[in-house]
Amino acid sequence: RFELAKAKRSPSKLRCPIICIMGHVDTGKTKILDNIRRTNVQDGEAGGITQQIGATFIPKESLLERTAQLNKGEWDLRVPGLLVIDTPGHESFTNLRSRGSSLCDLAILVVDIMHGLEPQTIESLNMLRSRKTPFVIALNKIDRMYDWTENTNFPTQETLSLQKDHARREFQDRYDKIVIEFAEQGLNVAKYWENPDPRTFINIIPTSAITGEGMPDILQTLVDLCQNRMNERIQYVPAVQCTVLEVKMIEGLGTSVDVILINGKLKEGQTIVVAGLEGAITTQIRALLTPQPMREMRVKGSYIHHKEIEGAQGIKIVATGLEKAVAGTSLLVLDPEDDEMELREEVLSDMKGVLARVDKS
Ligand code: GDP
Image 1 (tube, rainbow, N blue to C red):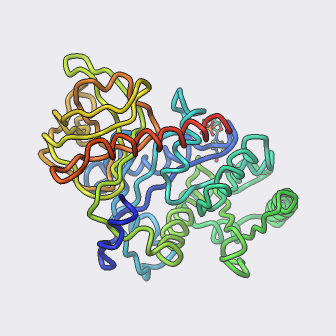
Image 2: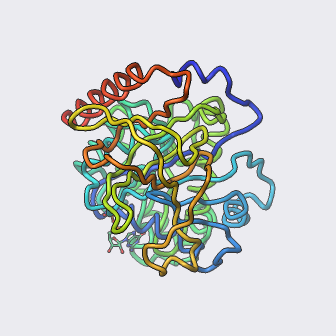
Protein backbone atom coordinates (compact mmCIF):
# COMPACT_ATOMS: atom_id res chain seq x y z
CA ARG A 1 0.00 0.00 0.00
CA PHE A 2 2.69 2.45 1.05
CA GLU A 3 4.99 1.08 -1.65
CA LEU A 4 2.39 2.04 -4.28
CA ALA A 5 1.99 5.52 -2.88
CA LYS A 6 5.71 6.15 -3.17
CA ALA A 7 5.10 7.02 -6.79
CA LYS A 8 3.49 10.22 -5.53
CA ARG A 9 6.50 11.36 -3.55
CA SER A 10 7.65 14.93 -3.97
CA PRO A 11 11.34 15.24 -4.95
CA SER A 12 11.38 18.89 -3.89
CA LYS A 13 9.91 18.29 -0.44
CA LEU A 14 12.08 16.44 2.04
CA ARG A 15 10.68 15.31 5.39
CA CYS A 16 12.85 15.25 8.46
CA PRO A 17 14.91 12.11 8.79
CA ILE A 18 14.23 9.93 11.82
CA ILE A 19 17.30 9.18 13.90
CA CYS A 20 17.81 6.65 16.66
CA ILE A 21 20.67 6.27 19.12
CA MET A 22 21.94 2.77 19.86
CA GLY A 23 24.80 1.09 21.67
CA HIS A 24 25.94 -0.67 24.82
CA VAL A 25 24.60 0.45 28.21
CA ASP A 26 26.50 3.38 29.80
CA THR A 27 28.24 4.45 26.59
CA GLY A 28 26.42 7.81 26.79
CA LYS A 29 23.31 7.41 24.61
CA THR A 30 21.11 9.35 27.01
CA LYS A 31 23.77 12.00 27.54
CA ILE A 32 24.12 12.53 23.78
CA LEU A 33 20.37 12.96 23.53
CA ASP A 34 20.47 15.35 26.51
CA ASN A 35 23.24 17.31 24.89
CA ILE A 36 21.21 17.67 21.72
CA ARG A 37 18.28 18.86 23.83
CA ARG A 38 20.18 21.07 26.20
CA THR A 39 20.21 23.77 23.57
CA ASN A 40 16.49 23.62 23.88
CA VAL A 41 16.41 24.56 27.41
CA GLN A 42 18.99 27.29 26.95
CA ASP A 43 17.51 28.73 23.79
CA GLY A 44 13.96 28.24 24.98
CA GLU A 45 11.70 28.60 22.04
CA ALA A 46 14.08 30.70 20.03
CA GLY A 47 15.89 27.49 19.10
CA GLY A 48 12.54 26.02 18.19
CA ILE A 49 13.44 22.53 19.39
CA THR A 50 10.30 20.77 20.52
CA GLN A 51 9.64 17.82 22.68
CA GLN A 52 7.36 15.37 20.95
CA ILE A 53 5.80 12.11 21.91
CA GLY A 54 8.70 9.65 21.96
CA ALA A 55 10.90 11.99 19.96
CA THR A 56 12.64 15.37 19.90
CA PHE A 57 12.43 17.67 16.90
CA ILE A 58 15.54 19.72 16.08
CA PRO A 59 14.64 22.33 13.49
CA LYS A 60 16.84 23.60 10.68
CA GLU A 61 17.63 26.88 12.46
CA SER A 62 18.96 25.06 15.47
CA LEU A 63 21.08 22.71 13.30
CA LEU A 64 22.59 25.72 11.53
CA GLU A 65 23.37 27.43 14.78
CA ARG A 66 24.97 24.40 16.39
CA THR A 67 27.18 23.61 13.39
CA ALA A 68 28.22 27.17 12.50
CA GLN A 69 31.73 26.84 13.94
CA LEU A 70 32.25 23.72 11.84
CA ASN A 71 30.94 24.83 8.46
CA LYS A 72 31.48 28.61 8.82
CA GLY A 73 27.94 29.16 7.64
CA GLU A 74 28.55 27.42 4.32
CA TRP A 75 26.40 24.36 4.38
CA ASP A 76 23.68 23.26 2.02
CA LEU A 77 21.07 22.11 4.53
CA ARG A 78 17.96 20.89 2.74
CA VAL A 79 16.03 18.90 5.36
CA PRO A 80 13.49 20.68 7.60
CA GLY A 81 15.17 19.27 10.71
CA LEU A 82 15.92 16.02 12.49
CA LEU A 83 13.54 13.90 14.53
CA VAL A 84 15.49 12.03 17.19
CA ILE A 85 13.75 9.07 18.82
CA ASP A 86 13.92 9.16 22.61
CA THR A 87 14.40 5.43 23.22
CA PRO A 88 17.56 5.46 25.37
CA GLY A 89 16.73 5.29 29.06
CA HIS A 90 13.23 4.14 28.30
CA GLU A 91 12.18 1.35 30.64
CA SER A 92 11.18 -0.93 27.78
CA PHE A 93 14.19 -0.01 25.73
CA THR A 94 15.25 -3.61 25.26
CA ASN A 95 12.12 -4.27 23.25
CA LEU A 96 12.18 -0.93 21.55
CA ARG A 97 15.71 -1.44 20.33
CA SER A 98 14.53 -3.75 17.65
CA ARG A 99 11.34 -1.82 16.91
CA GLY A 100 13.08 1.52 16.96
CA SER A 101 15.76 0.55 14.55
CA SER A 102 13.33 -0.47 11.83
CA LEU A 103 11.53 2.85 12.13
CA CYS A 104 14.72 4.85 11.85
CA ASP A 105 16.19 6.25 8.67
CA LEU A 106 19.57 6.64 10.31
CA ALA A 107 21.27 5.70 13.54
CA ILE A 108 24.03 6.87 15.83
CA LEU A 109 25.93 3.88 17.23
CA VAL A 110 27.62 5.00 20.43
CA VAL A 111 30.93 3.42 21.52
CA ASP A 112 32.80 4.38 24.70
CA ILE A 113 36.37 5.19 23.62
CA MET A 114 37.64 3.87 26.98
CA HIS A 115 35.93 0.48 26.49
CA GLY A 116 35.82 -0.22 22.77
CA LEU A 117 33.27 -2.67 21.39
CA GLU A 118 31.01 -4.31 23.99
CA PRO A 119 28.36 -7.05 23.66
CA GLN A 120 25.42 -4.71 22.99
CA THR A 121 27.52 -2.69 20.54
CA ILE A 122 27.86 -5.82 18.45
CA GLU A 123 24.17 -6.65 18.90
CA SER A 124 23.16 -3.14 17.74
CA LEU A 125 25.63 -3.33 14.88
CA ASN A 126 24.15 -6.58 13.64
CA MET A 127 20.64 -5.20 13.94
CA LEU A 128 21.56 -2.14 11.88
CA ARG A 129 23.27 -4.26 9.26
CA SER A 130 20.38 -6.68 8.92
CA ARG A 131 17.96 -3.76 8.41
CA LYS A 132 20.45 -1.98 6.13
CA THR A 133 20.07 1.16 8.25
CA PRO A 134 22.90 3.62 7.52
CA PHE A 135 24.68 4.86 10.64
CA VAL A 136 27.54 6.88 12.04
CA ILE A 137 29.65 5.92 15.05
CA ALA A 138 30.01 8.33 17.97
CA LEU A 139 33.28 7.47 19.71
CA ASN A 140 32.17 9.00 22.98
CA LYS A 141 33.80 10.16 26.24
CA ILE A 142 36.96 11.57 24.63
CA ASP A 143 37.11 13.98 27.59
CA ARG A 144 37.97 11.04 29.87
CA MET A 145 41.38 10.56 28.34
CA TYR A 146 44.34 11.56 30.49
CA ASP A 147 45.02 15.30 30.55
CA TRP A 148 42.33 16.12 27.99
CA THR A 149 41.78 19.85 27.50
CA GLU A 150 38.07 20.56 27.27
CA ASN A 151 36.87 22.91 24.54
CA THR A 152 33.15 23.22 25.07
CA ASN A 153 31.04 22.48 21.98
CA PHE A 154 34.08 22.55 19.66
CA PRO A 155 34.16 20.58 16.41
CA THR A 156 36.28 17.43 16.82
CA GLN A 157 39.22 18.33 14.60
CA GLU A 158 39.61 21.70 16.25
CA THR A 159 39.63 20.29 19.76
CA LEU A 160 42.04 17.53 18.71
CA SER A 161 44.44 20.09 17.28
CA LEU A 162 44.38 21.95 20.62
CA GLN A 163 45.34 18.89 22.72
CA LYS A 164 48.77 18.24 24.14
CA ASP A 165 50.82 15.67 22.21
CA HIS A 166 50.36 12.86 24.73
CA ALA A 167 46.56 13.30 24.83
CA ARG A 168 46.43 13.25 21.04
CA ARG A 169 48.62 10.16 21.04
CA GLU A 170 46.37 8.37 23.53
CA PHE A 171 43.38 9.23 21.36
CA GLN A 172 45.10 7.80 18.28
CA ASP A 173 46.11 4.58 20.11
CA ARG A 174 42.58 3.96 21.38
CA TYR A 175 41.12 4.85 18.00
CA ASP A 176 43.48 2.42 16.20
CA LYS A 177 42.44 -0.41 18.54
CA ILE A 178 38.78 0.27 17.95
CA VAL A 179 39.29 0.32 14.18
CA ILE A 180 40.69 -3.21 14.50
CA GLU A 181 37.76 -4.31 16.68
CA PHE A 182 35.35 -3.11 14.01
CA ALA A 183 37.42 -4.84 11.32
CA GLU A 184 37.00 -8.05 13.31
CA GLN A 185 33.24 -7.53 12.90
CA GLY A 186 33.76 -7.16 9.16
CA LEU A 187 33.30 -3.41 9.13
CA ASN A 188 35.54 -0.69 7.70
CA VAL A 189 35.47 2.51 9.73
CA ALA A 190 37.33 5.82 9.49
CA LYS A 191 37.41 9.27 11.09
CA TYR A 192 34.84 11.10 9.05
CA TRP A 193 37.28 13.74 7.82
CA GLU A 194 39.70 11.05 6.61
CA ASN A 195 37.11 8.68 5.15
CA PRO A 196 38.58 7.26 1.91
CA ASP A 197 35.19 6.04 0.61
CA PRO A 198 31.93 6.89 2.41
CA ARG A 199 30.14 4.08 0.55
CA THR A 200 32.27 1.36 2.14
CA PHE A 201 33.70 3.03 5.27
CA ILE A 202 31.47 4.01 8.20
CA ASN A 203 32.18 7.47 9.61
CA ILE A 204 33.57 7.71 13.13
CA ILE A 205 32.93 10.93 15.04
CA PRO A 206 34.89 11.38 18.28
CA THR A 207 32.61 13.09 20.82
CA SER A 208 32.04 14.05 24.40
CA ALA A 209 28.43 14.30 25.44
CA ILE A 210 29.55 16.13 28.59
CA THR A 211 31.67 18.90 27.00
CA GLY A 212 29.77 18.97 23.70
CA GLU A 213 32.97 18.37 21.73
CA GLY A 214 32.14 16.71 18.41
CA MET A 215 28.41 17.34 18.75
CA PRO A 216 28.40 19.79 15.81
CA ASP A 217 30.14 17.09 13.77
CA ILE A 218 27.51 14.48 14.64
CA LEU A 219 24.63 16.70 13.57
CA GLN A 220 26.30 17.75 10.32
CA THR A 221 27.49 14.26 9.39
CA LEU A 222 24.02 12.80 9.94
CA VAL A 223 22.36 15.40 7.77
CA ASP A 224 25.00 15.09 5.03
CA LEU A 225 24.61 11.33 5.02
CA CYS A 226 20.89 11.51 4.39
CA GLN A 227 21.03 14.35 1.91
CA ASN A 228 23.80 12.78 -0.14
CA ARG A 229 23.00 9.12 0.08
CA MET A 230 19.34 8.74 1.07
CA ASN A 231 17.65 11.56 -0.75
CA GLU A 232 15.01 9.33 -2.22
CA ARG A 233 14.11 7.72 1.09
CA ILE A 234 13.42 11.04 2.79
CA GLN A 235 11.32 12.56 0.03
CA TYR A 236 7.93 13.32 1.54
CA VAL A 237 5.15 10.92 0.54
CA PRO A 238 1.54 12.05 1.10
CA ALA A 239 0.36 8.52 2.02
CA VAL A 240 0.21 7.78 5.75
CA GLN A 241 3.17 5.78 7.09
CA CYS A 242 2.91 5.46 10.83
CA THR A 243 4.44 3.22 13.54
CA VAL A 244 3.07 2.55 17.04
CA LEU A 245 5.71 3.17 19.72
CA GLU A 246 3.76 2.51 22.85
CA VAL A 247 0.28 1.81 24.18
CA LYS A 248 -0.81 3.90 27.18
CA MET A 249 -3.78 4.59 29.40
CA ILE A 250 -4.23 8.26 30.19
CA GLU A 251 -6.34 9.30 33.12
CA GLY A 252 -9.54 10.93 31.95
CA LEU A 253 -8.84 10.20 28.26
CA GLY A 254 -8.94 6.41 28.02
CA THR A 255 -6.64 4.42 25.79
CA SER A 256 -4.06 5.97 23.55
CA VAL A 257 -1.15 5.00 21.37
CA ASP A 258 2.02 7.00 21.00
CA VAL A 259 3.07 6.89 17.37
CA ILE A 260 5.67 8.23 15.01
CA LEU A 261 3.99 9.54 11.89
CA ILE A 262 6.72 9.26 9.26
CA ASN A 263 4.85 10.38 6.15
CA GLY A 264 1.40 11.69 5.30
CA LYS A 265 -1.27 13.42 7.35
CA LEU A 266 -3.55 12.21 10.15
CA LYS A 267 -6.90 13.86 10.90
CA GLU A 268 -9.23 13.84 13.86
CA GLY A 269 -12.23 11.56 13.23
CA GLN A 270 -10.40 9.33 10.74
CA THR A 271 -10.85 5.56 10.98
CA ILE A 272 -7.63 3.70 11.73
CA VAL A 273 -6.63 0.05 11.72
CA VAL A 274 -4.02 -1.25 14.18
CA ALA A 275 -2.72 -4.74 14.98
CA GLY A 276 -3.91 -6.10 18.33
CA LEU A 277 -2.92 -9.17 20.34
CA GLU A 278 -6.43 -10.56 19.83
CA GLY A 279 -6.85 -9.53 16.21
CA ALA A 280 -6.93 -6.31 14.22
CA ILE A 281 -8.53 -3.22 15.79
CA THR A 282 -10.62 -0.75 13.78
CA THR A 283 -11.36 2.49 15.63
CA GLN A 284 -11.79 6.26 15.21
CA ILE A 285 -9.22 8.92 16.10
CA ARG A 286 -10.84 10.86 18.95
CA ALA A 287 -7.93 13.20 19.52
CA LEU A 288 -4.49 13.95 18.07
CA LEU A 289 -2.20 15.31 20.76
CA THR A 290 1.31 16.68 21.11
CA PRO A 291 2.98 18.02 24.26
CA GLN A 292 2.88 21.71 25.14
CA PRO A 293 5.88 23.78 24.03
CA MET A 294 8.99 23.53 26.25
CA ARG A 295 8.12 26.26 28.70
CA GLU A 296 4.79 24.69 29.49
CA MET A 297 6.01 21.14 29.90
CA ARG A 298 5.44 21.32 33.62
CA VAL A 299 1.71 21.74 33.16
CA LYS A 300 1.19 18.03 33.70
CA GLY A 301 -1.18 16.15 31.46
CA SER A 302 -1.99 19.10 29.27
CA TYR A 303 -1.63 18.58 25.54
CA ILE A 304 -2.19 20.55 22.38
CA HIS A 305 -5.11 19.20 20.31
CA HIS A 306 -4.69 19.10 16.53
CA LYS A 307 -7.38 18.84 13.85
CA GLU A 308 -4.73 17.40 11.54
CA ILE A 309 -1.02 16.87 11.63
CA GLU A 310 1.69 16.06 9.04
CA GLY A 311 4.77 13.78 9.30
CA ALA A 312 7.41 13.36 10.41
CA GLN A 313 6.18 13.88 14.00
CA GLY A 314 5.67 12.09 17.30
CA ILE A 315 1.97 12.09 18.24
CA LYS A 316 -0.39 10.68 20.84
CA ILE A 317 -3.58 9.27 19.34
CA VAL A 318 -6.58 8.84 21.63
CA ALA A 319 -9.19 6.27 20.56
CA THR A 320 -11.32 3.56 22.12
CA GLY A 321 -10.37 -0.11 22.15
CA LEU A 322 -6.61 0.28 21.90
CA GLU A 323 -5.75 -1.70 25.07
CA LYS A 324 -4.43 -4.67 23.12
CA ALA A 325 -2.63 -2.74 20.36
CA VAL A 326 0.91 -3.97 19.68
CA ALA A 327 3.86 -1.61 19.78
CA GLY A 328 6.22 -1.64 16.82
CA THR A 329 3.51 -2.30 14.24
CA SER A 330 2.09 -0.10 11.48
CA LEU A 331 -1.01 2.01 11.88
CA LEU A 332 -3.13 2.34 8.72
CA VAL A 333 -5.88 4.81 7.80
CA LEU A 334 -9.11 3.37 6.43
CA ASP A 335 -10.28 5.67 3.66
CA PRO A 336 -13.85 5.35 2.29
CA GLU A 337 -12.58 3.59 -0.86
CA ASP A 338 -10.49 1.06 1.11
CA ASP A 339 -11.40 -2.55 1.87
CA GLU A 340 -11.38 -2.88 5.65
CA MET A 341 -10.64 -6.63 5.59
CA GLU A 342 -7.56 -6.08 3.44
CA LEU A 343 -6.21 -3.49 5.85
CA ARG A 344 -6.90 -5.72 8.84
CA GLU A 345 -4.93 -8.51 7.20
CA GLU A 346 -2.13 -6.12 6.36
CA VAL A 347 -1.63 -4.94 9.96
CA LEU A 348 -1.68 -8.52 11.24
CA SER A 349 0.93 -9.69 8.77
CA ASP A 350 3.05 -6.67 9.75
CA MET A 351 2.66 -7.71 13.41
CA LYS A 352 3.93 -11.20 12.66
CA GLY A 353 7.06 -9.65 11.15
CA VAL A 354 7.59 -7.45 14.22
CA LEU A 355 7.10 -10.32 16.68
CA ALA A 356 9.49 -12.51 14.70
CA ARG A 357 12.10 -9.75 14.83
CA VAL A 358 11.65 -9.24 18.59
CA ASP A 359 12.08 -13.00 19.12
CA LYS A 360 15.26 -13.04 17.09
CA SER A 361 16.88 -10.13 18.89
P1 GDP B 1 23.45 5.15 28.32
O1 GDP B 1 23.23 3.99 29.23
O2 GDP B 1 24.16 4.73 27.06
O3 GDP B 1 22.24 5.98 28.04
O4 GDP B 1 24.53 6.07 29.08
P2 GDP B 1 24.34 7.45 29.85
O5 GDP B 1 24.07 8.55 28.93
O6 GDP B 1 23.36 7.24 30.96
O7 GDP B 1 25.80 7.65 30.46
C1 GDP B 1 26.38 6.72 31.35
C2 GDP B 1 27.37 7.45 32.25
O8 GDP B 1 28.44 7.97 31.49
C3 GDP B 1 26.76 8.65 32.98
O9 GDP B 1 27.32 8.73 34.25
C4 GDP B 1 27.17 9.82 32.13
O10 GDP B 1 27.27 11.02 32.86
C5 GDP B 1 28.53 9.38 31.62
N1 GDP B 1 28.87 9.95 30.32
C6 GDP B 1 28.13 9.92 29.20
N2 GDP B 1 28.76 10.52 28.17
C7 GDP B 1 29.93 10.97 28.67
C8 GDP B 1 31.04 11.70 28.10
O11 GDP B 1 31.09 12.04 26.93
N3 GDP B 1 32.09 11.96 28.97
C9 GDP B 1 32.10 11.58 30.27
N4 GDP B 1 33.16 11.90 31.01
N5 GDP B 1 31.08 10.91 30.82
C10 GDP B 1 30.01 10.60 30.04
